[in-house]
Length: 370
Image (cartoon, rainbow, N blue to C red; front, side, top):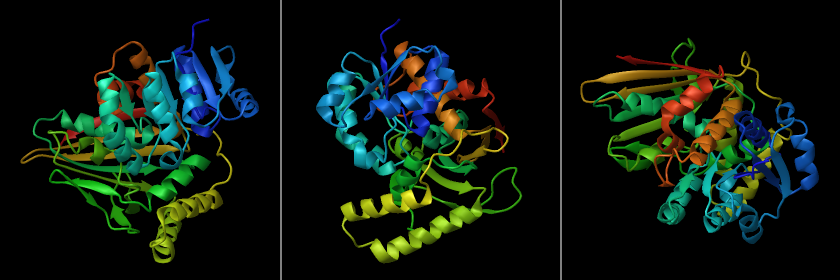
């Protein structure tokens, strides 16, 4: 059996199991890593697609030296352990020390900015990829924006997500913390901050009701495009079909700003974890295409031209598994296009990621000049 060159750290979690499934589908050997050997073996055993797959379970302490020893001799580390701003530092440091490409599934934009500023140059110097948010959120939006940017003259990107899936335990803790931090949009080549705890009504193509949305951390897209000469403006809003849930979260954010806004950062991190664990305390079931549908809309604009890109899909968490496996496959084949701090849409290619999900029935798309 081939030696595993990919490590999925946090493999026993909800998203980690979906990534593991698709790595097996691609025929990519991997190490399923985490802190508890018994839990790893039990959770991997619950994934029917892993029967006969080439993988091994490895327990490891969540500290830099132990992680570095595990990563040595591997090529790709896929980190699925969040909240990332709380738990990610030892993992990215260990990946760099071991000479591994680093990708993760974060939605936390402050973590993305932290990685760019603190580690981007170091990864680039070693010809290594540093690609946070190589997952449906925020990669789905960038798949749409990259299609929009294929149209000459487009420099402004207005992105909206519509989701209809239940969130995992780790995702809920991550989004609760990121909704209380600075949430950015790109305006005239400069990152600006959305007002805190404010909803925005938006129109989603193909949906008659006007839906309330939130910046949801601001999105990874404005960060990726901040220094991209093609783009001057980029904003992201996120809506959910379950509007009662979104309204409840908005209420929590209003309360948080009033009651905890002036508290020390460490205390606020603890509070958002507690809120997240009260909202979701057990993992949801696997997504079903007819229940868990999504829409990504990107409205692109230039001086005199405009374009509309719509991605109609389903099963966002499962799409993350496909994105991860496609990314690992391309990296192992040395088919990536950039190193240092980058995005999956750039280093792997947006059309490659779209095709990987479209081939499996998770996505369709259209681009129209308007």
